[in-house]
Image (tube, rainbow, N blue to C red):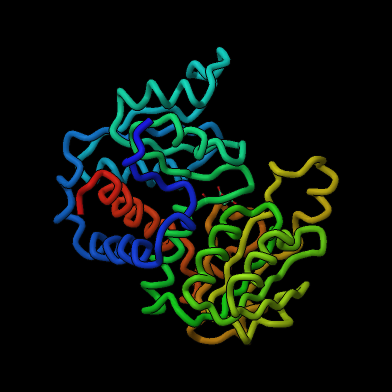
Length: 308
Ligand code: NCD
């Protein structure tokens, strides 16, 4: 274990200045990617996905390749020695010899943190259970910065699965630090934001929290609407999931009263919560958001590898 290695397990471990720097570098890379095409030449990223992923995995891999680096890894832990019972600690000790940086997604909360204790290379948390997803938050911040010009003073509405959605937990905790004016929490009773997160907000920040059941009640007050999928894989039984699956379906009709400069975000994958007809609305930015994810990960990787 090396103490001087910088990891990204939670954005709470990063200062506001450090987060802002990563976001701003992400924007610079987005504006002129060719200037960074050799930034990580000769370096290797290990991509360790113990849970399914499309955007996060491929945007990390694409990010490393676009920085001139290389990738190794697995997307199905059953094809690695994990299937023989190897622990995360042992896997990462060995990967530390083969790679220069590692990104890990794991169904167990805290697994990337544990890995970081045994690693001599930077570990990036790419989602641990229902806990945190810091690089999705960096993605969200770059998207907000790009469309709104600032990360401060927005009214943000989060809609859907606020209980299990790790993207929600990470985003709220970080945006509160950027002087968010007000969070509007839209969810069914069964999927409200956990008390621990609410308490964290109330104890540490001067922010207004409004909880409602329906989008229509608040649509005209929102600057940023963050839609989320009901997290099927975190439910204990199928019946409960089916009951809540279609709680929200955003349609053209529903966003008619919204501000002209509101933006609609979604970490993706979308299931039912945004109708396809909304995709053409200029306020729908969720596919651009996925693109920003790659640029902000290029920024993060180059920073952690000691580049920019
Ligand atoms: C999110 C996740 O994995 O938490 N996806 C992603 O990384 N873009 C959101 C989700 O799966 O609903």
